[in-house]
Figure 1 (cartoon, helix red, strand yellow):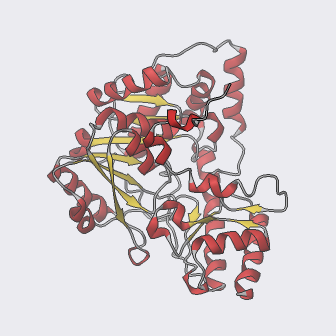
Figure 2 (figure 1 turned 180 degrees about the vertical axis):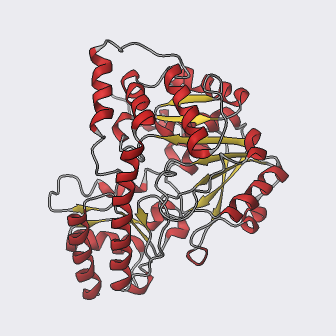
Figure 3 (figure 1 turned 90 degrees about the vertical axis):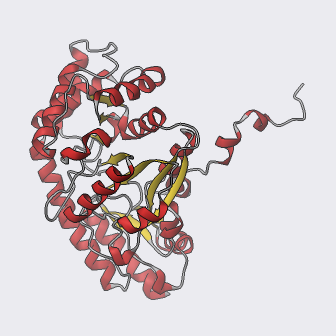
Length: 391
């Protein structure tokens, strides 16, 4: 006989209070609707390049079906270290300072659990990826959001970081190029934030999964700053640059003692990243430069089109310099972000994500991904233009 008490009593109060992803929650509405053009999920529309898929297939045919080392295949870690040297001008020992993970999401979770003690405060910027605050809480930390603004092109300023730091602050999380805004940092930003981190002796967790999708100017990364090396946990992965989302492959670069600590969390929770994915990763790093260039050029073309279209219809949108998102303001319509997104979906069958999914300061904005084909983008913009005019 079933008792009268709810099974919910067994669920941790912490987990019970966590919100569901604002992205996934919104897109449950879209499920099953074939008429909808989705500009929502941040996933490349490109299929993983054939030579990378072929490497995965070959690994299965050759019987690579066993566990790898917890840190990952030595050949892949060595290849990642070489990639970091070539692309980021950063020196890491592939055998002791590189850890292969199940996507950047696992890398982020394991890194925070490895460095945070209960009650440690963690500064992060909003708008930001939806998982940051929940994972900080799950790791025992206290999330401390710092807002970024359209007038600054959603860059983080040291003045706001200084206002947020306390004696309890342990870490700073940054994500540039940024999801959801497409914002990037300039060299002066990197220098000022480096000084801030060192002055307060913080751990900087830099999520640079969109680093290869930088369109203008120099790619400004924290990985190449020698003075920051002992304070930096660098996160990256294969999902965006090589269109390998389904492979779930990421990595951490950090000083050996920190990498070893993160590996313990990874070891007990995951064991090792999938062997077939690691085989594909070796091929991507070794021979995938042309693939990155080809996809980046196409994203660049789409970016220019969607920004021009949004501005033309009266939705103010700054020109993002990275990632594959735009973050237009919909304040001129008089609708909230949720109202705009729901009505656009219901009335014109175009799915975008309300800015509030990425933090309170996302109100008045909308995230649109241009990781979809140009014909789909053109049709989506035509429908959105009709919607805005109807208001």
